[in-house]
Structures are given as C-alpha cells and as structure tokens.
Length: 310
Image 1 (tube, rainbow, N blue to C red):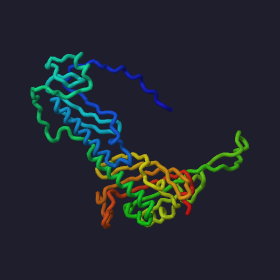
Image 2 (cartoon, rainbow, N blue to C red):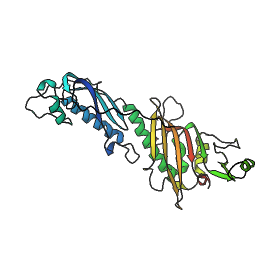
Image 3 (tube, helix red, strand yellow):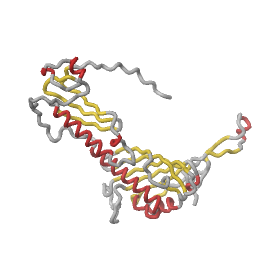
Image 4 (cartoon, rainbow, N blue to C red):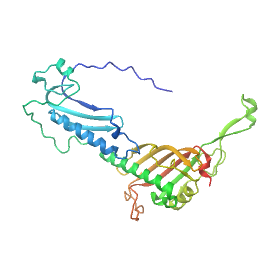
C-alpha cells in the first residue's frame, strides 16, 4: 500500500525581509554522490559544505547547523540585520524585493565598500555528521577490500571477522512440486522455497546453521563456488550505511556475482561492523595490514543455488 502525498503548495518566489533561514544546496554534484566507485564522496561533500558556508559568511551571515544528506546540504543561518531571502543583501542597502528577485540566484557583492564579517566561533557551523561520514568512508573502504579478498584470496578472509562473529546465508530459489492441495487449485503445481542444507530460509527442515568464529566462517565462505564480483570490481554495487553509535555501523549492499562461464547471480548482504578495539578484548588484528572495521554479524542472501556448490 502506497501512501499518497499531500499536494505540494505553490512556491513563494517573492523575496522577503528575514533575519534567519536555511540555505539549500541541491542536487549534489556527481563528485558528492555516494557510490563505491567514488570512495571520496564524503570529503567532497564536506568541501562543498565548507565552500557554501564561506559564501554565506561573505554575505554577513552567521552559519549554524549544517546537515549533509544524500539528497543535498542544508545550512541554517542567522543575520544581525534584515536581509532579502533570495539574495541575502541587506534590506537597508536600497535594494527592494523586485530587485532582489531579479538577481536570483544569490551573487557576491563587488562594491568598493568592505563588508564587516562577524567572527564565527570554532564550534559553530560544524558539520554534524563528521563521525557518520568517517564510519561511512571506513565501511566503503572495508567492502572494497572485502570484495578483493573474496575474489583473489578467499582463504585469508577470516581476518575481516571479529573472533566471535556470526555468519549465515539463505538461498532463495523457487521450485515446483505436485501436492495434494494442488488438486483443489487452478494450478497443477505450487511453488515453495527449495531446501538447501544449512540455509536459514528452510521451511520443511530446521537445520539452518549459524557459523560462529573465524574458522567456521572461513570454511563456509571458502566452500562457495567460483564466483567473483562481476570479475572486475565492486564499483556497481549498490549500498547504504547506518551508523548505530560511535563505533558500530551497518553496511547493506546489493549487486551481482559472476563466474568464469559468464553466469550471474544476485546477492544481498548485511554486515554489522565495528571499529577494532572498541569495547572488545580479542578483536585487534595483529597483521601488518589491519582491517579498518571488523564484521560482527554477516547475513548473505543469494538468488541462485550454484553459489553454494563447488
């Protein structure tokens, strides 16, 4: 069931005299889009937010709260004197609403008179999602490396997991079978989920397995078929991240795996990731190239059974 949105009120393009507001930057430019092919998107967003904040300061405004999202950047601001809502020019400068509207979008002043710029405390104008962006960057960096190890050296993938990590998988393939119930239906066959050993989505069998610890997980993943992330890179993988607290982040992704014969299957994965050493005793990776995050929980879903076959 889809919720119907209320009708959108018409935009008010009339410039108003205001002393506070929110400056929107949307849509974001391509370098700010969140994709695995663009791992520096968070840095690009912060740079854009910083550039926009400085533009507001040159207008004599005082930026406060800054929010960065996938659909744009919003910067709240206040002004000590009334300004026009579209150009941010002072109302007392002699410009009026008609002039202000005609000069949209905002432009910087080039007059000879210098404008006094109020100082901004260091803690104001802070980008609120810096910690979240850092975790998102680490999660994207983690998955790119995970995909590379999965493709080239799967036996070494255990170090990506916390010693107490848990892993399970599900195979979603519908098969048809004759049933007594089919005699009373308009179809000759009904569909059900195929029963695969150790898959957590079994209906008739209750032997779905949860693998615990690095050795069990490594053995399970190493037994999968000769599939890779579409043979080249995971750049086309769609993903999203959710920061749970200062050290945990959930990484969700969807994409395709390919084998040497050109066959392709789709996958969905959910990782619960934690910063190494955060409130845990035995998770520190002693290798010379430690992972940026460690897997605490890993759920894998595939749409074809051949991934589970050697």
